[in-house]
Image 1 (cartoon, rainbow, N blue to C red):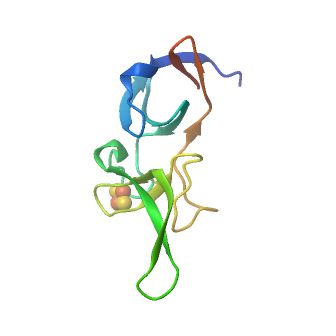
Image 2 (image 1 turned 180 degrees about the vertical axis):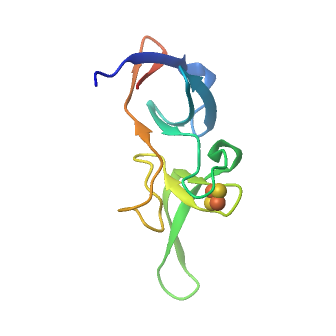
Length: 119
Ligand code: FES
């Protein structure tokens, strides 16, 4: 099926380092901005259907030495508000099972100050 390119919002409506829920056609999406890159995900958790836009935008951590944590993927991890499943904004994959669990992600492009989504 051929995809449509639909304007989701103006780039200046989503400050850098934040996320925002938008409606694009019949879809509820979550937009996540990192600099000039904007990611688009389906705004429904794969677990029990919460709006992930009601969660927080954060990072993940991996252990180093005892008592040491290293932050990774800052500003691109969405944590669901209901049971804390976490998703990577880049591809919608769930951190606990990235090969099998995800929310849909959509290609985006920024042109002329607008964020467009391919749906
Ligand atoms: S509904 Fe999102 S983690 Fe349960």
